[in-house]
Length: 212
Image 1 (spheres, helix red, strand yellow):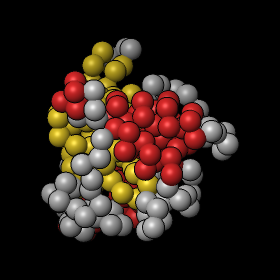
Image 2 (cartoon, one colour):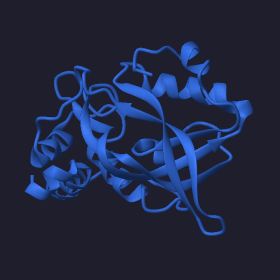
Image 3 (cartoon, rainbow, N blue to C red):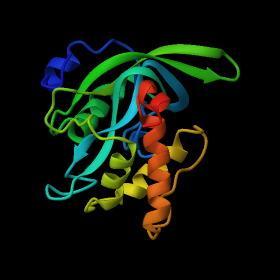
Image 4 (cartoon, rainbow, N blue to C red):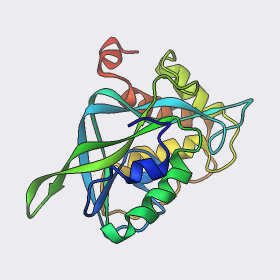
């Protein structure tokens, strides 16, 4: 599977049954598609990274922001959503319009480990949008501070890039909370601190060890 695959072709290889979707960024707190349940989960073999330039929702062509992508290595906590099989086509159509406009992601089914108080650990195959490292919008040369600066100084069209980052950071902690946007007015210093912390968490393990 790759980012150039159209929805019709992707539908032909989607496993039968209920559809699981793994969210690691804004999908955690704003899925905007029908689902029957949501559970906190973890993916191994990928980490969350501020690695994709955004000129649509989090910035402009002149002042792009950064959004999340899944990159190889490490692990990532997020939210898994289960949609009934009867809604799978509707869900995928919604996700394609939202995530695949510029084809910067590769749609891929990955194993997600769900924490369930009654059943223990449950493993499901969930759709995740993995960063395409060959795409022109993918960036990996920025250090942590550089990513934080790009987030806090981008020109915003939708939710502020900094507030989006703050919400992403708090949303992954629980699957039961009702998510709300942080206050729109924050000082650059506070945003920079929060975004730097998020960028450090999202950095590859090797970069964190170097203190990058």
